[in-house]
View 1 (tube, helix red, strand yellow):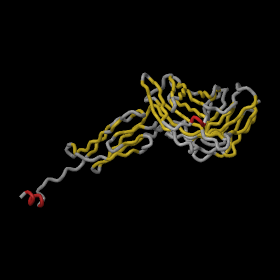
View 2 (cartoon, one colour):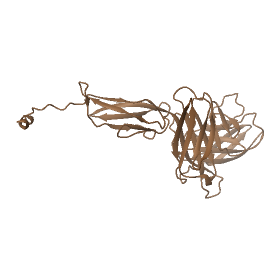
View 3 (cartoon, rainbow, N blue to C red):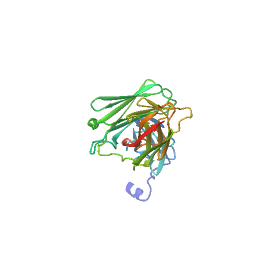
View 4 (cartoon, rainbow, N blue to C red):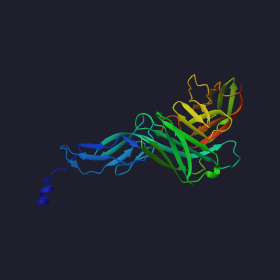
Length: 326
C-alpha cells in the first residue's frame, strides 16, 4: 500500500534550499587557525543537511579546504581582500577577508660580478602589518637552518614595516625552514617559509649604467623579466641589508629616502622604482668622492603593501659602474 501511494505522488517533496549563511572573521592573522561556518536553511528557516563547497579568490593568500578550515599564508594587498565563497543547494555566500601580522619571503640572491658559475646566495625579507593603528618599537628576528639569526629594527608608529637581507655567501644556502618572529603589544607573531631550490634566479639588468650630472644620478638599463621592483643606489660597497622605518631608510649605516624623498632630505643615496630610467639626487651631506652604483632587481614589491608579497622572492644586483660626486 505504501509503495502504491508513493508511486502515485502521495509522498512529501524534499525541502529546497532558500538561504545559505556563511560566518567567520573578516580580519585574520597570518598563521592563526581559522574556520568558516556555513548553514543551509529552507524557506521556513529550518536547517537543511547539505554538502558545502568552498573556494578562495586568492588561494596563495588564504586557502580553504573542504571543511571550511582556512590557512592564512600572506598579507592581503591593500584594497584587494580575499573573497571566500561557500556554495550549496544552488545558493552561494561570500565572506570578504583581510589579513594582518608577520610574513616571510625567501629566495635566491645573485650579483653580476660573481665568479662565473658561482652558486647564488640567499635573499630574505620580512613584512609586518598591524591589525589596526601603528606599530610599537620592536625587532624582527629570523632564524635560519643551523640556528643562524638575523635581526632588524621595526620603528615606533610605523603603519607597515619591512626589512630585507641580501646574503652573498653561497656556502650558507641550506634548504629548510626559516622562521620569523616579532613581538607587538605582548603578542608574538610567528611565521615560516621554506627556501626554494637555488637554481631559480632572477636575471640581471641588461646594459646597466649610472650617469651623473653634478649630484643628479640617472640609472638606466633593460629590466629583467620577472622584476617588479628596483632598488638603485650609490654606495661604497654593495648593500646587504635594508629596512624602511617611517620615512627613512637605513642601509648599511647610510641614511637615505623613499623614491620621492622630501625636499629637506639631504642624505638621499637610493631610489625605488618599478622601471628604468630612475633619477636620484644625491644629498649635499654625502661626501664628495668615488662611489659604486648598483641596480637591485626584485621579483616582488617590498615597498608597496598594495601588492601581495610572493613567498619565493628572487633578487639580482647589477653593477652600474662608478660615479664621482663633486
